[in-house]
Every structure is written in structure tokens, then in C-alpha cells.
Image 1 (tube, protein in one colour):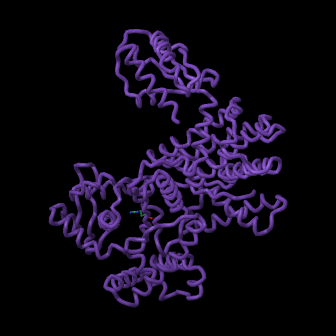
Image 2 (tube, rainbow, N blue to C red):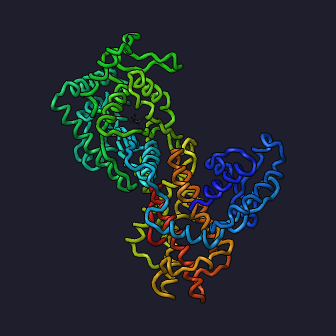
Image 3 (cartoon, helix red, strand yellow):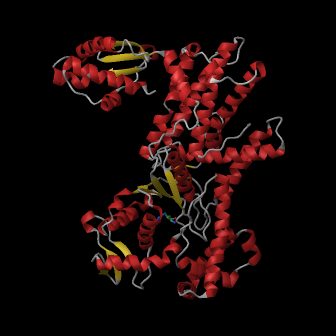
Length: 575
Ligand code: ARG
């Protein structure tokens, strides 16, 4: 089906026969480009690279190569024409042949996916909010990118195991306990635990500024927790359970789930073993009373393992986590979807694991991302993701107010899907390393390059299909479609865009960049909308023609739906 590769194979043979040079077909394929104008052909092979070795001009090489290819490719049905154009050899696909193959592939379930990862396991560490602090906008990116990477890898046949490395341990819990003893409110705690805990957290810090004994009391509570005091443990349990329940509400709204909620506390009983192994491997050194692994030779700051008071650190837990996951999950690769600010932390952790002699440490990958800007950062004010989603939903509802024939309930469902789709797509539509400005107006613009635009295009495709059904009955099967009717430029271009989907998904996985898919979907929607507004009647008088065109429409709708699902953008049925 990939005609570029097929053409490349012909080129490699012809190069060998004509010039006696050896070329790797996959390299040849990678060098191919698209002719500047579609009427010149579908793919172009540039001959510049050979000029030096063959002591001929690129145009002379192209011309000889093209005549050889004309003979070689005469019996290959997939191609209609091959010719030299200056330094290029351009090839034109046999349109009907090509259209038939693409539609066949595109309408198969699982189109875009592959078996590349079958039998292989990949782990993803994402989201990882800190308990007893609200699910802020900062953890949105990790959640959304991690989820999309999961879907993408699953489409490629990998088994994906996702882990939510919750921040559920540390001295802040002692502080919260003390604050709760002083000011806790059971009713508020039940109603909105994260907000209540956050208020306590802010109140504690304000009070601790005036009164240093507050910190001491917080530390005392944390010590009780560490020593297994039942009262402290009950608090911890409760803070954790209630916070998780609230996070779950966000995850449900985003359609995200995790295989394991192994947070930092999960590794409490696994830290001694790590520290012991570090010590016996001679990797630990004392530095100002603390235990560290020096990493000067890598130009990294030392990795802190134990504080002066013997307390473990973030890195200590990550070391234990990596080891545990490796044993429990057997993932060959582990992706850590965490903000770029933690790059040094992961370099340190991975380097220490490598020094401990774990060959799999090379397969641990930090997948960093930039920040969301322009959303309130007033001191002591965290932005609650829930409020953000609610605001988006309210804005979407305003637009839907004007739509007729929707019940209040439908409106509510759609508004939620639009808000989620808008946020998710806006996040994934750029290189993940770029920071971006949070802006509801841009995110929700139904005519811009946005999630709602793609959702709306999807709804529109379905409605064109319904128009067909109204006129001609059931939607066509592939056998009843004549691909020869699908050769005009705008339709053919759309089919060509459909054909790219599998490469795009594979590339998104290779680069760990969902943006590849986001951009592709915008191209696909654009190609469809161009056709839609070009005056070509998709459903007209001619039944055979309408059948053929509606078949393409169906394929576009499926690919759009599949691509949006890979990103985690929900699909409203109406809009
Ligand atoms: N809870 C951490 C934070 O909010 C992120 C944890 C990321 N995962 C990890 N294995 N360190 O910064």
C-alpha cells in the first residue's frame, strides 16, 4: 500500500542496473519528496546525491534513471507514469488502483495502527499530582500527554502499563495533620476535601510564619506517621483516599485511567534495600552530613539519597520505584511524562541506576514538556483544574444556547465534551516542549485550528452520511464502490491524506509527540472542508458517484474519529 516504498524498491534496482551503484531502498524512500504541484506527479526522487560519485549532472542521472524505470515499471499496475523533470524523477500513481487500496486499508478496523509493538510492554509514568494539594493545571499536561502516548502505543500493538506516581508522602502531611487538629472541619472535608486541605495548607503556612512552633508540631506529626502511629496513619489514609476520589473525578472527565496508583508512599518499605545496595556498591558518599551519589564526571549535581536527619528524598523513591516497576511489570521501556523543570532530577536518577549496574536504565526516558502560562499564579493561589473545566463548559454552553433541537441534557453532555476536547487538543497541538498561554477564546474557536473545529467537522461528516442514507438507503460497502469515479483532484487529494495516517501514528510514537497526529487531523479536516466547499456534490443525482464519494466521506470520518481518540478528544454526536 505504501507506494513510496514500492517506487523506492524500483529505483534501487534501476540504480544498480544502470549505474552499478548500490542504494538502500529505505534510504531512497526517505529521500523522496512531493512534487511542487500535484499535476507533476505523486512522488519525486531527487538525483543530486549521486552527482559527485557518478560525475554526471543530476538532470542527466534523472533522465537515464527514468528511462530505465519506464521499462521496469511497465508491468506494475500501481503506477501510471514515470518521467524525468530536471534533476528529479517524478512518478504518478495509477489513481484508481491507489484509491481502491487506500480505501480498503482505511476502512479496516484498527487502521493507523500496526503490529510493531506486539508482545512488547511499555510503561508510562504520568499525571502524578501531589496529594493534599489541588489537582492544579500543572498536572494537566502530564495527564493529557501521558494518556495520548498510551493510546498511540496501544494502537501500535504495545501493551501499555500506566502508573500514577502520586505525591502522597512527605513532611507536608505532618503539617496538614497539625492544621487539621487545629482547624479541621469534618463537613467541609466530606464536601470538598482537596479544597479544604488546600485551605488548611495555606493557613498553616501563614501561621508558621508568625509562630515557628507550628513547623515543629508538623514535623512531630510526620514522625508519628513514619513510626506507624495509628492516629497519624488514619489521617494519612483519609487524606489520601479523599484526594484520590477527587482526582478520579477529574480523570473521569478527561477519560483517563491508570493501572497502578503506586505513589511515593508505596515505596516506604523498599527504600532500605536501595540504600543498602548503593552503600555496598560503594556509590554513597557523605556530604555535609547527607548521603549522596556524586555525579561530577557527568557534570551533574550529586544525587541526594538521605538528608542529615536520615529522611529519604524524592530521588530515593524514584530509584526504588524504577527497580520495583522493572520487576513487577517487566516493561522494556519506561516513559516519565514530567515537566522540563525536572530534567536534572531524571538525569541523576537514571545515571545512578546505570551505576548500580542496571542495563535497563538506558530504557528509562524522561518525556519533558513546557509550561502553561497566563493562568493565575498569585501567591498561594493554585488554579484548580476543576474550575478551569467548569469555565470551559460554561463557555461552550453559551455557544450551544443558539443551537436548536437540543435538549438541556444533550447540551450539557456536548458542552462537557467540547470543553474537554478544547483543552486537550490545545495542549497536544504543539511540540510538547513549548510553553503556551492558556486562552479559552482560542481554544474554543469553532472556526480555528482547535479541538471543537475537529469535533464539528466529525459531526458534519456524519451528517453528510445521513443525507446519503436519506436519499439512497444504506451506506455503501467497498465492493459497490467504483474507484475509477474518485480521480478528480480534490477527492484524490483527500484519499492521499487518508493514506498518510499510519505513518503519522508511527512517527508520533517514534518522537513521543502527539502533535504529529494533531497536525495531521487538521490537514485531513482541511482537505475535507476544501472539498466540501469546492462545489463538488458529495450526495447528488448520480447514485454511483454519490456512493463512491460517500464511501470516502465514511473513511475520513473514521480516521478523524480514530485520530481524535488517540489524542483523548471526545466525540460529540451532535453540535
Ligand atoms: N509529584 C511530582 C510533581 O508534582 C511528579 C512525579 C513524577 N514522577 C516521578 N516518577 N518522579 O512534581
